[in-house]
Image 1 (cartoon, one colour):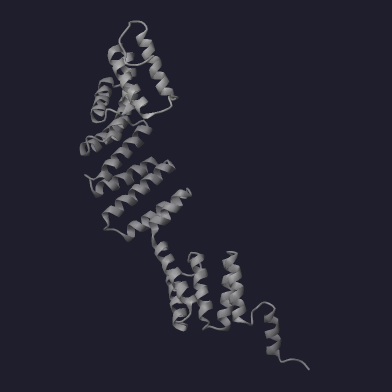
Image 2 (cartoon, helix red, strand yellow; image 1 turned 120 degrees about the vertical axis):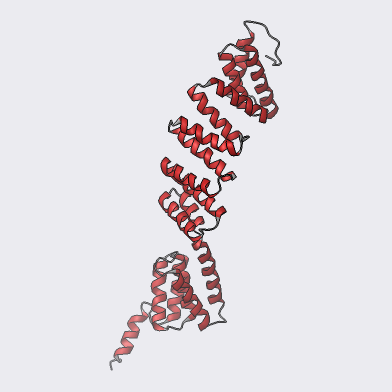
Length: 316
């Protein structure tokens, strides 16, 4: 005779692993291994429809939602789901292991700064900035973290070519602690942005504000020299070069540039002195002498040396 209707329905469901929660649970595991989380989600939901107290399936469901980055179920609800699974079966290693994974992911997911860093590496700039802003809103009183985050926002805007927004973000860093190292670095970055866009007076102003805090900052002094070099303010330029050499006699590109300028203005003895200092520093630091600047300096020494014999420390 005919089987009762309920058994026919059970047989039909059996073809899709739908009558056995354990089979659905195992099938979900296969989908998880293939990173097919949506199919895994479907299997686990069906398993829990049949057996709402199946702790391991509930726990695995939480894991799948975690792997989907809480897009299908909010983090708080996923966390509660895993807690309920533990309450249903507190001796199951599966439920505790999943809770540990979800808790770790929750901490990672809540770290908006790390998310911003990942987005920035992938050139997803808008998402990176949004993540940094979210972290700022969660830590409004952490001055050190705020400075770091605003600097990252500024650099992200800079990478996007959004100079005005970058400058505004660097000002946020400065305003947090105007005498800090971070403020000095921000003035330097603002100067670079103004220099790159041809706003030389504003670049000079920014660099000088950084030097007011840290007068011996070689990076800012060098960047300031680039502005005067470009605008041909030679006296100011030479003054900065001498200051840099006084602070660090091995800052070799300054010796080279000094030699060029002294040579250009006919001060050959000073040019030779600068070139010889460059060569000495270079040869003390390098085993191979294949740098174009090095060869250029040697050539200039030769050109100076030929017309009027001078004593030189260079073996030409």
